Length: 214
Image 1: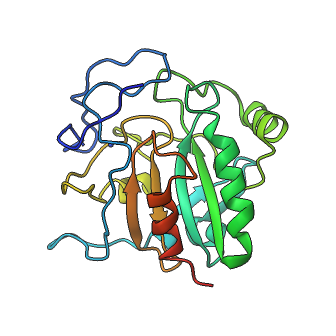
Image 2: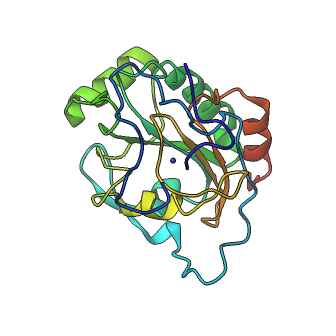
């Protein structure tokens, strides 16, 4: 399944506007997407940009509870992933749950944000998503209500996350389901990985280990 290469368009340059080719419901990111191992240390925000504390941003859980990103993370480092139930990458749920369980005692959580923006691959209700995740993959990590990650309706959390640059310094829209952001317990976005990066990828694990509070 093709994903963005290192010189491809950014997951896009201008918020609310997409210049990507039309996607089909195949579970595959479009050609030209960022390489699946792309990452970048993001300790220093871009000069001149007002920095929003990610921890203060509102989140509605899949169960409908109003909270904040910080309360959902509960002082832990997090791997934030936009998820979908009918994508070719959906089996990554298994690896994400394994990672969540393995590192939970060290101050880590996975947080999933369901989105139906890519090939309409998350069409279900909150109840259907919850049932699918729990019965198919035994998911125990927190999930938000279904959101938009791109465009004018972009969720505030993703409005902040997409400010993060990849290894080439490119920022912008999410390209496909299962793009990943490593977030430190202080709300700093530490690294960004493309959709094809598996949860057991050594580079992803290294980025997570670097921000674990325990």
